[in-house]
Length: 331
Image (tube, rainbow, N blue to C red; front, side, top):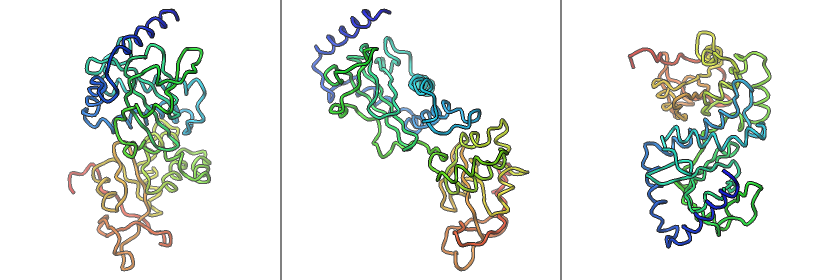
């Protein structure tokens, strides 16, 4: 399609929109799309996971060892918007739109992603249409998603060579956010938020097994995703490197460090100790010591026939207990 065709389509859309009397507060199509997305099972959690997985897909840590968005090439960052659009459609089974990306409740919706808040690039053909505006910042562990009807007077006058514009900051209040800002937490990329000295210590060993041992030793009491494990190990059998029988779980038990996974019995241990509970594909490590008079007030868990509590910095190291066998049907 020629640039002239694009201009004609954009002008037609604007003309049609200009004849409508709806304001953002009475836009029935916008309301229907928002209500539909919110009504989908666990939609907020699924949005967050799609964004987390898309960033991890771009980083490709298993093959590259990268964990920081800033390490991506420019072409990879540019490709992020397309991947977010594709992965959201796969997750939520949105129908193909015409001419926009999706068709939701029979309504055309375009999808735009930006890693910088407010920098969504709006093409001329989106004028008059709804846009799903998505933002995520891995360094802040935050994300947002909202719907907005695109109107010419709400866009910045400047445009790039593709005739795309951004939303004027004074009109971002026209965006109808799907969920409140304080509920939109991106699953943490632990490697981005550890102190630099700890990250250096994690990646210093040449052995993938030693790197994983150091990760679980230094990132205690924090949820660690499978992708972080994959990035640190950089080995196809990375899950084997976490488990017992020679993996990190066995090696760190000597230091009293437990590594709980997403098995139900492991989750119960984490919960009883007052730790964040790992969900699917996640782990959490923590050092424990036997419960005694001075720490009896802490949350306790029964393991290997004894009571254990989270260790404090001045507690001496004790060999840790065994975690429950997740293959066993007994409690």
